[in-house]
Image (cartoon, rainbow, N blue to C red; front, top):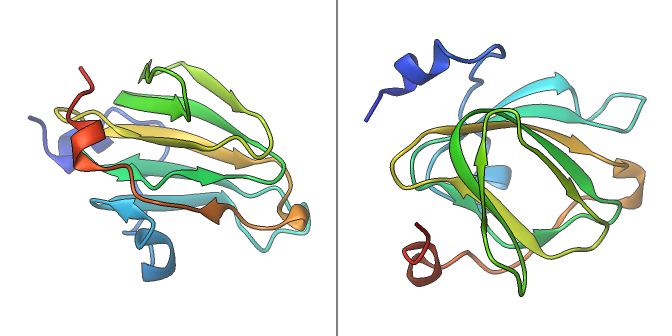
Length: 141
């Protein structure tokens, strides 16, 4: 499996620092964030390049106004509650409707990166829910 440095060489956006604790506590594994449009921007539409180590994924969560993911590298997963998981690769786009319970993260054998665009932070931050369990995650192929 490639190292973080090898994976970073393939990306057009940088791998940022490890996420701060208040964000990292909603992930299983290490996640790295690089702010393209910061959370405190007057636009109120933060945009981040998010890099997941292999097996890293976020907890189930909802965005009050939705979210868009643009996959920039590696292989990962996206799943909405009650639906099959969708395998993701560079160039894939995921439109997440408001208040849809979902999770996303890296495949077990691959780094994964995407740009995350929040639809409107004025409506509030994501609602973080339970972790995506190892039992559920290990069923993904």
